[in-house]
Image (cartoon, rainbow, N blue to C red; front, side, top):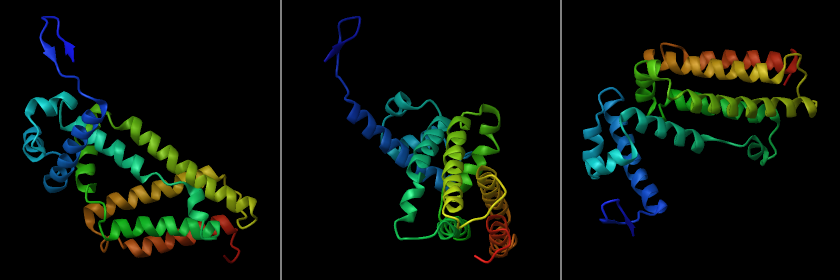
Length: 216
């Protein structure tokens, strides 16, 4: 038990309890963002969906952007993958790389990430001015770049790849392509952007880069 300056006692809230309440708020917020998008979601929507009092929600988050940024931060942590884990089944570096790219393609084509519409609404509205998402976005891009570069470098060291382009440059190109096709497909749909054909073309480009026109 703690006491305010006027001597009134206040209950001590454990860190576990705080985290549990934050998780309830974030779970409710995600449901609302998926249903209504970022711009149409209000704090009142989240309060009603979470069944936590107004004061309780505002204890942890001041506005919908703060909640959304925390959702993105946690989402990025959950999405982190270690490249070493992808080699467990005896795959080659090329197979590991293709597995990652196929996963991205499937995620876009079948719209597996339901938060994406709200994500792009946020990027092109509030985030354009506030830049609150930049630190976590930079960290995510850096982690993905390092993981992809690791796979490519390992392929070079194993003499699987014969490549004159620095691995980090190829990794950045992969990220740029995937982000770009994601945005185009979001606006126009997979069929209108010829999603499958673009990914096939991009794989052909990577094969040329990594094998110097040798057969894979």
